[in-house]
Length: 318
Image (cartoon, rainbow, N blue to C red; front, side):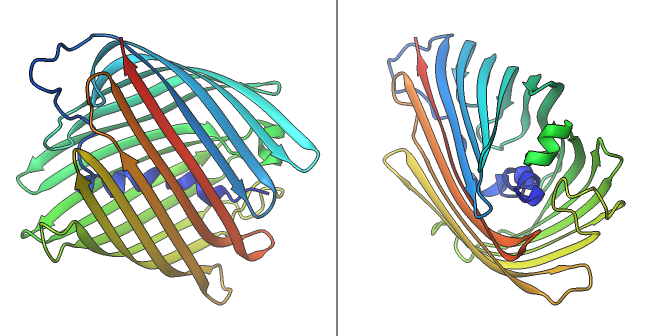
């Protein structure tokens, strides 16, 4: 059964946003901007318990300036599989993004209707980031979606996750990020989350970061009928190394982390995290980004749960 913790990694882009270069690069001199674009998006994931997720989307963007400024719609087809069980889903969404290229401040939103089995859900995934002072930034976020396990999808179990992140720069080389949020499940379970992340850049020119991460959550209901992985108390501490490189307008990044997690009163055990990303500049009429990741942690059946994914998006102006 898929580990519900994978769904919590919606926070990861929020936590690393200060070190992520803008998706928007200017067009080459003399080129004319188009106001329309179309694209495709995909997401594939597998885990060591045999649960698979497949997603393929088509996008139409009638208002498109660049990859940080657009409005449009997205139609997505989902397929979930686990041994001899499978489930199809369909989602139609409004999507929008208005992000300042230099500061990463602004908003992004995906809101739509998601049908799977006999269940229908209004879903959304949005954030708003704004500066409070020269080196202080506040980000608020909200996410509502299905819990992606076989049992939870059959029951129509969903969650709503709301919270805020505060970024505080300490000099030129150190940033501290704190996150607090609550996750409300439709089965009356509630999780309260807390995270803190310390980022050190030894050189502003190398693209290298050293990171210390800590996260914890507490669930109000320990027994959810086996619908998803749900320890009452969870903690993870991790040390990670991040690297980002730009070349000819492209950017590539790598994050590798090793940590320890503690579940309820059980002895602690090791965790691992690896992430890769590649992103193109906007040259002429196309934009491309790719991400892949791997995580090892605990699940129902012990400490050796593996989860890996790949996703990408390709946008073409016309």
